[in-house]
Image (cartoon, rainbow, N blue to C red; front, side):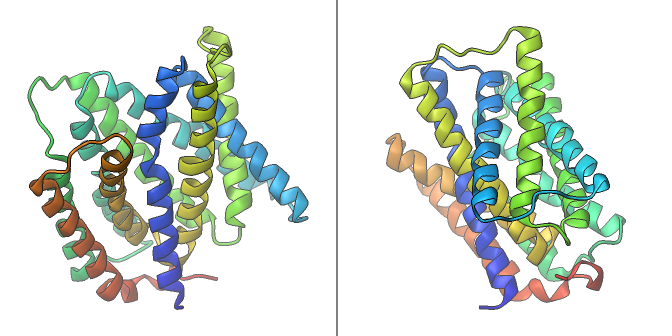
Length: 298
């Protein structure tokens, strides 16, 4: 299978992992957890699993000092900051609008990748981005009634931080194993939330079994599968393509909510899902050959 196809499937697997996050967070809240506890547990448990796996496989985890600091900042500031802002926005905005505003990040990634010279924008990529964006609007059916600016600024801040995180990751991941990269990102993010939670007195350890199982699920599916899959795909297909294919995540979330929570899928959501898939197909069939030579796989 061509590397571009491998990369696309890694991103699809990552999107499927991330799609479980909202559902599992609902279960964790019901089990007595709060945001600080969920995020600290999520990243630290994932980091522990990664470290054990790497040790068993005898994969070296020592990296250059420069890469260590880069990945630590990516985890604590980039992924950690994005996660906090996104969680904060949920308090102010409907979930559908929050999702729609967060998914402005593929457009931001496309612009940033062109500005810094990592990639060039093609007609195919622009068409795929436009098609996926239209499908996203139909799928989420966001309502703008009762919008609070605090929530809008929080989720747009999360989108900006995540866009920069992807661009930076695209530049420094070429010579690093995705598993090792994920170990450092998860460790630094988990330690940041642990320190913040301990200092603010927000950590809650007396959770029900449902709470702990939900946090374990969050560590495995949206974190291990999500983060590792994204880094692996990013190395192969680049920042723009990876971020556009990631727009399949809301579609998978809607399908999971229908299966697990019994939520009804409307005809408009079905149309939005079909449009999203069409955009991903356009990108995969016609947009992969235009990556700039500077970011090809080494």
